[in-house]
Length: 123
Image 1 (cartoon, rainbow, N blue to C red):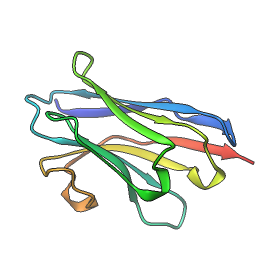
Image 2: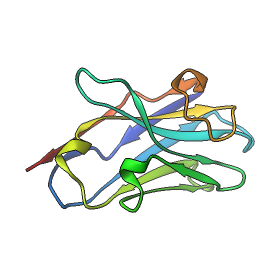
Image 3: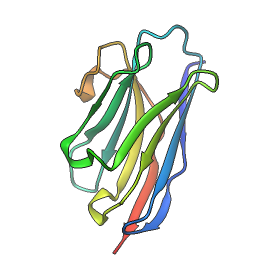
């Protein structure tokens, strides 16, 4: 009934751009946080950015500030991750997730997860 579906991953050259989408279905109201996480092989899953749906307030990891932008479309019930000036170190599986907490960076406080989409940046 409630699910998140990611799309938009792929292979891109360093310096290029990519936009990821996460469509939410079955969620009601606006008192939740939507986050983008990424996980590279052998590494911990880490928060990239998140947005509070109701207010639009955002948080960004230092590694992506100035390059990535999170946004949401209320009508489409979709959250986006615009990624510019991509670097090889951005290569990872990217996940969207939902949390009842306010702009939390903690993996364990996200309750609902998408299936993930692969982003590969070539050098």
